[in-house]
Length: 67
Image (cartoon, rainbow, N blue to C red; front, side):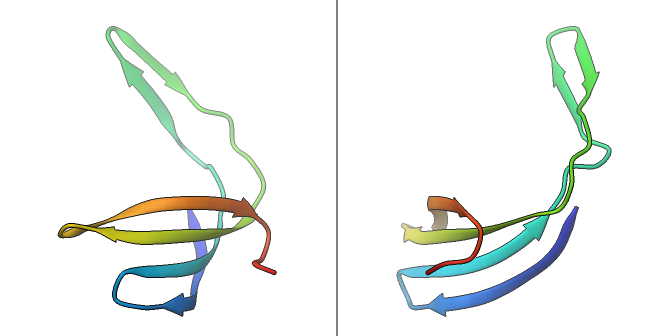
């Protein structure tokens, strides 16, 4: 569950987001396997994205707010 997201920086080729989320109701699925994932508490991360071609890729993720 995404609880909040904010834009910290943005440019044509990169962007930085502050994201708070938690895992709730997740399921892992594979060949003949279906398992519920454990729930967790809300966690805030700083996510750096970079543009690659026509899409975006995650460059890095750090726990907590950017410094």
